[in-house]
Length: 260
Length: 181
Image (tube, rainbow over all chains, first blue to last red; front, side):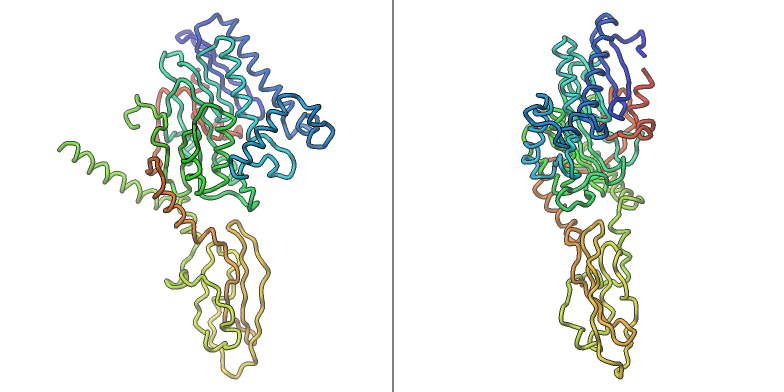
């Protein structure tokens, strides 16, 4: 529901089993903005239908069962599989699309889908937008207040508080944590739930990679801090199980917030 | 001068926060998991094969109380006041029990119906080393280190954080932001 005081459009819809919040801050006619928003949600639903591991008829499931050859797969699926293979190498095996036995590229797909939607919005001239799918955020330009987007990082023990506030005009922010569904991130090497890191936030240019890096770091445990520290092009914020907060010195923290 | 005063106040505040967080429930899992009955027991985590199996009387001190998880620790509470006239000791090696920290395997020595010794053949190494590891990370870390803080920040446009379930979303700051629209 958009208010009259601020230009732009805001919309929340459940997609991929998670609430997706879209905020387009460009001062354009509402019909145009609505059409752009329709395209964003249609794309995310298409990704869900094609890449969901819960739908037996999805392209991912058909490929996993061997009903679809790699040469017959869509360009999107081939790109996703390629990226997952690259990520497996880049994360020393801690990002593993086959960790559960079958193919499950979800750890990359959600961030990638949001990144593609954001790229398309910019290509369509919507330079100022914020798209958040279940905590994975891509922002561009400025909010309707005219200021850079302000992104809170959820406090890992208090869902109604944040622990850091980031600010930027071109950021992908992904957070992976064990506070939501217990220790559901598994260390693919030991097959046991990952321990040591309560929450990992990765900030950088690409949301698919940021999301995968965050998940991999949680799986690595405490060793993931050093790994993130050496990761080129991406910044991080980590909260350990014993409530310490470690973050890159050049993390884009909001400067308007006096506490930061 | 004013800065120095601020710095000292800040240091005192963060130290207080540190103490509070350390004491907060749910943050010190490892410390809670270890009941720590005897002060020296936690140090003696190394298995001592060969000892005790042949000389039950010599190894009668109840030292084996360790294991970070408490999952497969058993038998060590039996006070080994074995009379010398008991039959010869026998050893039993337990199965490998897997818990969330790793594998645990215990060997016990029995004389009659009493356990006279217990030794860990396998313990999760990661648990014992986790503190050491985090110290190593800190010393090589190029970023900023502190305790996590709570902020009730206004004027947020969005919130990053795992909100996969609908219940988590309902309680989230993001939901509040979405509703305010």
